[in-house]
Length: 191
Length: 195
Image (cartoon, rainbow over all chains, first blue to last red; front, top):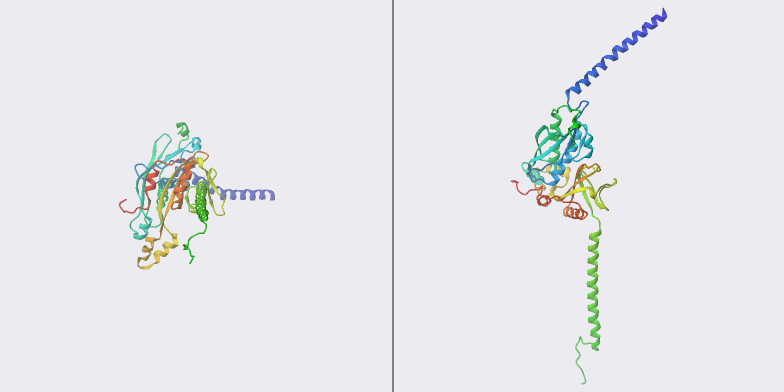
């Protein structure tokens, strides 16, 4: 009798433990499933991105601005966690990456500002940049195209406009829904 | 009276004049030679001394932090940036693909100065802003790493230093972009609003 009672107590304890710990595991699974289905970029398969050099277009843009936009884009896209990897232009390592998007940036408008004029007048001397950002596949298909601004109106140096621009581009891409990457992407051919 | 009139500058022996002239010419000759030699030496020094200048690293050079002040120098075949008390970062000059020169005008004093100017009553800070700016040269580099990936770096140098650095890099075989000349003329500090 004593042995059977002990066994029943053990069984009861095991049942209680199972009841307590089983539901959270299920809810965690649900949460994982939700996150993978909810956000196209943060699932098991993620896009990688390669940032191309900035194309000045017809705009007479100072080289420092081109360099600063490019470097800030690489930094800001890395911060978004939207992409598995962020590559630079001409990186040889991209040949082995299956799901790669290419970010092309073309300058559309540039208004050179003046930090001194901003400091003196407050209302004038803003540095303004407008670019067209395109996310393309290796095959050249454009999957996202946006026009983004980056300005510096009050405080900061003129080059700060490039930082603001890159942040806006990264924010725009983060908020956009990208199509699911296909695992057959590397078969599309080399760059 | 057996007196002879002797001019005050008269020298009793005529031959004594020759050594004076010779000495004068000799001294002049030595002076010129020394001057010329010194000039040559200084020119040689200018050419052979590798570039080194105090700069502000704005962005992009290796793992150097942004807006870091340090020394930018050319060591053998590498461009080196060293922040005080930190290990130096360097990029091989052969990997530099492009160098561009620009200039910009910045307000001096940073945030403390800006706050002080804002606190000055009757807009007096704005008047201070008119004079509290300084022109700098900016040098933009484009280089590649081991995997061929393109990097960009920008340095801010004292006025005039950028041209020296650019010349040194060009002398070592770095290419200058085609629109560099136009970019050099264009300043980020525009004098007129209609730009």
